[in-house]
Image 1 (spheres, rainbow, N blue to C red):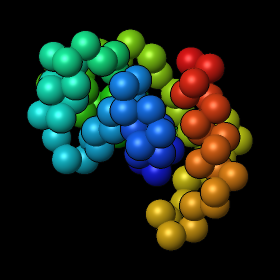
Image 2 (image 1 turned 90 degrees about the horizontal axis):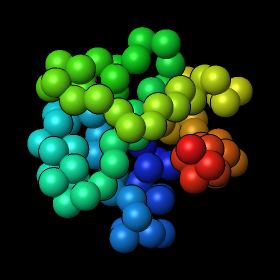
Image 3 (image 1 turned 90 degrees about the vertical axis):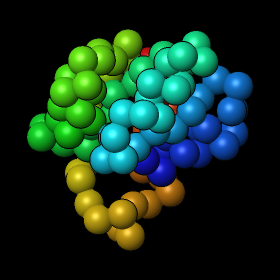
Image 4 (image 1 turned 180 degrees about the horizontal axis):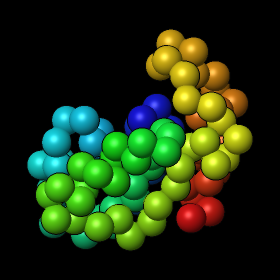
Length: 93
């Protein structure tokens, strides 16, 4: 979520962050404004993807953080280099 928020802050014309755990209303708003959906799952539990599926929505782009070599940790343990690695992956996707 920190990476998505960083991108939304840096380029609000291209990115909008919507946390899956808060529901899909923000995602629906972003889609109606012309944004694509990126499902960014933290691990193989696929929480973001499951939330989208439950709402009848599909991601245009999908990334799993653990596949980038970053293990899931507590938010307080997230290192800035992890955030930047995820930001780069999102941009490349």
